[in-house]
Image (tube, rainbow, N blue to C red; front, side, top):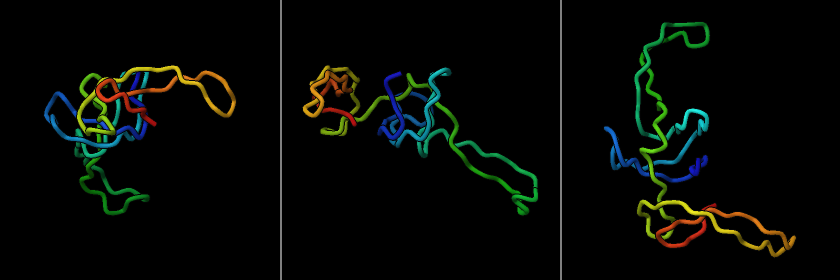
Length: 108
């Protein structure tokens, strides 16, 4: 899975198409991600000792990773992700870095 936590993504399919947000959590085994403000579900809860009020709570539900694309940091448009081997100046070792295919900009 090429999408990681804290990446900015855009939803490209489904009811929330066009919405953008930050990835809050990644589930690699299920190929799903939770995106901030996307795929909101309502949960009805009874009053408990922890939450004496109870009520209806809204929270994000997971969305399939194929329905999101990473946002290019330079142009702020959807882009695919590639890998590039770079040389680390401090240690002199080779490292793999994620890059945006659209602009060639490195992702954190």
